[in-house]
Amino acid sequence: MNYFISFIVAILLTAFSYFFGSRVIAKGIFFWQAIIIGTSVVSLGAITEALGAPIWIIILIPFPVGMVLLFFYLNVSLQTWFFTYLITLSIYTVIHIIVSYFFYFHSLIPAWKLS
Picture 1: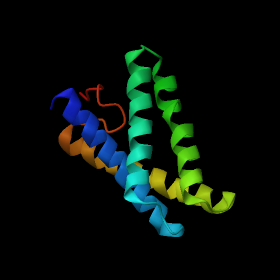
Picture 2: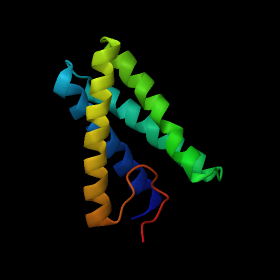
Picture 3: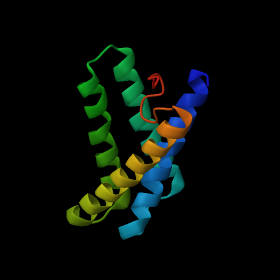
Picture 4: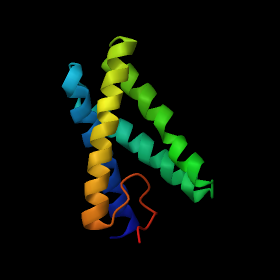
């Protein structure tokens, strides 16, 4: 899979996790808002990776951006947002495990190749 397609797939998988996660507890976000979050999170991860940052920074950098955007888009209490984010992260983890296992695709950083 070329990089551009991997990038788009990573954005969509991340957006799906935010979209469905936001609908479990709260009223949810619109899909276009999930796409914005997915694009921001994946782009920051890819840029950080391209700059040659250590792996812990590559993983750490996108999380606060996704968290803040979800908080603003949900417009709910801090407690509801926190539980919504935990559910979103759980959904993302399940999606990541499935896609990584069956398709050898790292859904956070498209440039990473799984062995």
